[in-house]
Image (cartoon, rainbow, N blue to C red; front, side, top):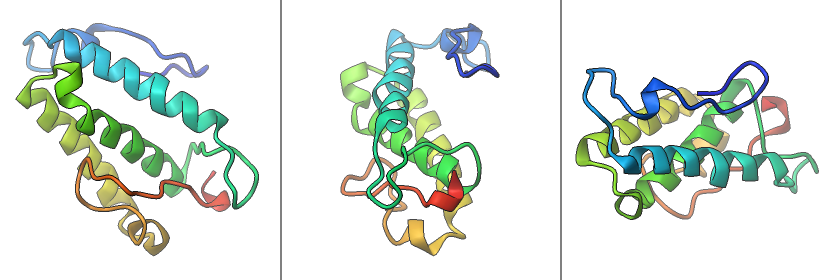
Length: 129
C-alpha cells in the first residue's frame, strides 16, 4: 500500500489475506519486489518519446505501470515462493488492470492480454502522466 506522500507502507495485508488466512513469506517478498524492482525503476526510466520518466498517476499510464509490476511478479512467482492462491490473486489484479487499458489501442497493441507474458512494451503516453 502506498501512502499519500508516496511511501510504501507494510501493514496487515502484507501478512494476512482478506479472508484472515496467513500469507506465505513469498507474498511479502513478491510485493517488495513489485514496488522496488519495478515501480522505483519506472520512476527513474527515461521515456524515449518525451524524455520524461515512465510514471503516471492517472489514465492508462497508471494501469500500464501496474501491469508491468504484476507481470514481473507472475514471472517470478516460483522464485518468490508465493502460493497458487496468491499467484491467482496477482493474476487477477493484472487482468483487472489490463481490462482498464483495453480502451487504449496504443497499449493493447503493445501489451499482451496474457498475464506474465514477456516482450511487452510498457512505455506510457505523455498525456497519460
